[in-house]
Image (cartoon, rainbow, N blue to C red; front, top):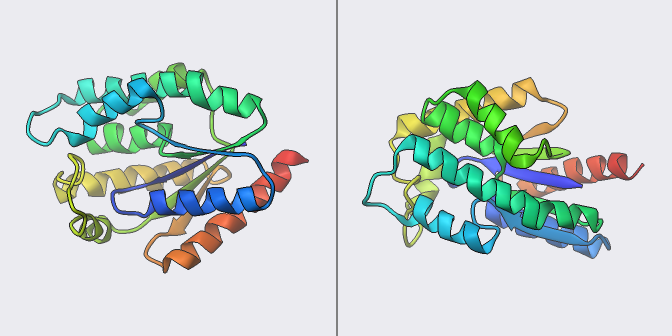
Length: 207
């Protein structure tokens, strides 16, 4: 089963993924927790270019293709083999992020990006996507408490509002796959909601 967690900056995805992975492991399921970008050796190099560089500008089209290159390698090298081995794969961001960030945030062509996503993934889609939703002001306030902020953290508020709009439109278009969770809640309540959705989908997937 392929599960993805999505959300804007500071939505708490990384913490929640670790907790969800531990939940499944404690229930006896083999789990692989991974991320995009950066789930492979080559992907870590691309992640560094995409996120750690805070001084040199990156053209929006270049940024798009770096994310897609990372995704293509990640799917081929990590995700598909893990799924074939019967593992539950939990990924921190995936194709929906490229629609939200590049199509809505950068205002690139959404249909073109959807086509590129299908090519990069070979048509593979998550069985379940958990969208941690909150106003971008809340997430950015959390980001400012970090020791360092990445390139996306530093984008203007209008960009992050467009990203949220993109995610919410995706959720409206695919309500069976994408479940929206209020990320402003206490982390324990967020995790409880995540586990409810994941367990329900896992039962359907196994039967």
